[in-house]
Structures are given as C-alpha cells and as structure tokens.
Image 1 (tube, rainbow, N blue to C red):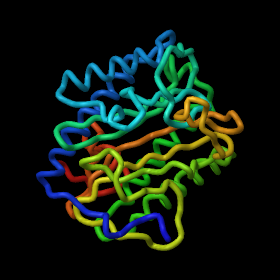
Image 2 (tube, rainbow, N blue to C red):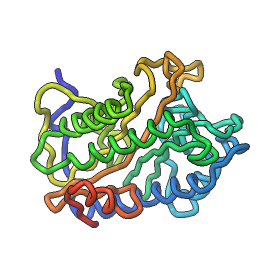
Image 3 (tube, helix red, strand yellow):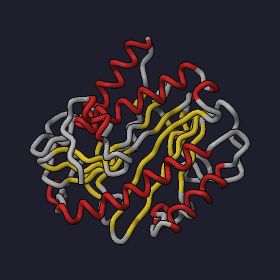
Length: 281
C-alpha cells in the first residue's frame, strides 16, 4: 500500500482558498514577528508566549494547542533537535541554530509554517549551519515550484531531494533528509491527507487536483537522518548529535498558479525567481 489514499485528496474553491490565505497570513506575520524578536538570553517559552498573544489578538487560535497532549503555540527546536521541541525555560545562546514551527486557525481554516535561524544573527553562525539553513530553505522552494495541477504530487519530494543533493555536492557534503516526518494536507484541520514526502518516492503517485492545499516541510541534517524521540515524548533529535534545520510553508495550487499561503507576499518573489507560475488570492 502506498503513502496516499487517493480518494481523500480533494481541492478547494476560490472562496475556501481565500479563507486559507487569512489563516496563512496570520502565521506568516507571527513568524516574522518572532524572527525580529529572537535574541540571545531569551527563553523559548518567551517566544511561545509572544506568538500566542499575537495570534489571539488577531482573531486566531494556536492550532498546535488543538493537538491532543500539546499545550503550546510553537515548536522550538534547538541545534540537534529536528522538530517538535517544546518551549520552556531553555535560554537561547548566541550561535544556536533555532527552528520555529507555528500554526494558527482562523474560523475553520488552518495555516502552518516554520523557519530556521541563527540566534544572534547570521554573523554568529558557523558556516556549515548557515549553509544548512539556506540549502534547506532553497529545497523547500524547489518543492513548491514543482507543483502543478495535473502533475504527480511525488514531484515535490523529488525536487526537494534534487535541490539538496546539488547543494551538498557543491559544498562537499551529503545532507540527511529526515524520512520519518513528512509534509501533509491542510485545511479544516492542520494535518490532513495527503502525506507529502520530502524525498523521491518510486512511482508517479496521485495527481494534483485543482485547489489542493498542502504543507511542505523539509527537515534536513548535517549528519545522518537517523533520529529518536526524547523522554518528553515530543522532541525529535538526531542520533549523531548533528544539527538540523526545518522550513515549512502552506501552499495552494490552482490552474492559475501557486500561492504560498503563509508567505507575506504570497511567494511571488521566490516563485518568479524560479520561473514558477504565481497566482495571487
């Protein structure tokens, strides 16, 4: 049996996509606020509180809190933590590699996105960490740009993998692409069918329908992709202690083109740079 249940892959109307854009924009604005605020000496819980306040003040609900057993607004993963790091009293240090994942629900619609950064700014980062962050982000956009109505959804993961392989070859390293955690459909729930792998999968897979909304989220390591869940039963870390980066956007695709629902400009600048079709909502 494959990764996908074809019967559950459905698109949305333009009216529904407009609602998705409202939720996605709130997530994008929240992440922009966090990116401007994070600094050495802050705790991850302080970032979480800021995010929750911003989302609720703007008419949204932190949708991570709707996941059974999780009570925070963000996942904050530091250094060798890949995803699902729980905000708390950890004090961020200059040079830490921090990944922040955030989601919000507005009305019935959801948004979900993530970014990675160096605490203290790029000048505080190790060269290999900066390359990891940039190459992971570039692979996300390569995956987004591969989306077309009528094309195989598997093209997304293939584009992500090819982008990382080329970047690794240029840098003289081989990146690890985490396979245990993948992207997903998004809409009236944060996590829906279909699953969206960040790596090449054999076969063509399902066909992308008009109005599909998915979250694409490559998780990439400087070492092997092998990982384990910590005692808190949430945080996922690399087995070999290597650092990891995580980037994510919620995306809509129609016959008119692609809209990155969680990007402030809808993804226009990056998509046009990649010669991919952009469509405003």
